[in-house]
Length: 406
Ligand SMILES: Nc1ncnc2c1ncn2[C@@H]1O[C@H](COP(=O)(O)OP(=O)(O)OP(=O)(O)O)[C@@H](O)[C@H]1O
Ligand SMILES: [Mg+2]
Image (cartoon, rainbow, N blue to C red; front, side, top):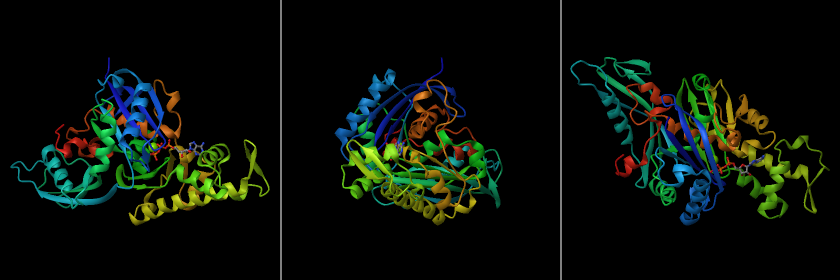
């Protein structure tokens, strides 16, 4: 029987623990065996702010998922990370290959990755991912798989993602306090990308935008490689908070109004229409104007971040929206207008097994984490530099850089 693997998505509004059985370890694919969920406490904008509360929430989700994860025997557990402390950039490193036969080896590629990790960082920051994008071999551009080719001078172009050590430590602490050993930490938009995007999308050029409760996470791909990542500290909770402020109602009321009637295309709402919650009536146009304003802001941030990275004009595959926030009516239409690209809403793809509970945009990250755990060669991409660009060595066990060893 094939191996069981796990993912834990510690979201701002909910924690999802997911267990799956590996179907294809080479491509990173698993069928869902069980899913456990619990409301999230102790998190703000994707980050743990109350460890005890967060631990309790994670424990509840793990309990609901059951099996080996609950008994502390689960191996291959991926945990997602996001939050405003994440930063990312593209870099390149060059080394001379001094081996006698001139052949580029896996070890040599690993040395390049290690050098990319040495990038200048703040004191409290550490590298989470080094994702090789392409290689230049003795001046020849665009090499995807350098291993086995001969070259003296090798340049690796890579996307580097870093985060605050203490923030990552707090996240790991909350999960490990539940008796679970975390094997890797994955940037949430990369996990969502695994669940929602096809290789064809990534080949063409596509942006994944995960609008969660606390953050909106972005990952863009071109020619199959990751080109840009960003985490915007605005999510569905900000939408509800704005409505609460505008209507002078409690957050919960505003949140319910949003879930029940939320739309971001205010001009389509009759300006005398009323929406009702309990005894009270609210002006529908006003509510949608508040939501539209916030949605516009988030999407403008997304657009600007892609512009700053110089990638927005290079995404013929358009934008793929996921996460609970993408469910606001009209979000795709507004995104098309603001981002200037074709946009669709996505739920996790390729899901097999007990798939029903995860067929919603809120579960993209959890399913993606499961796929990351299923991938069996991530830490040692077997000589395929290019595979690492789409999936493989995107993942890094945080413990590696905590010095715990892997
Ligand atoms: N039908 C809906 N219409 C509008 N908003 C929705 C809908 N369903 C869920 N949401 C919103 O989506 C948000 C939760 O999304 P999601 O579950 O993806 O976030 P999360 O993973 O908990 O948070 P994060 O990823 O930011 O840490 C909430 O703010 C919720 O109000
Ligand atoms: Mg999320």
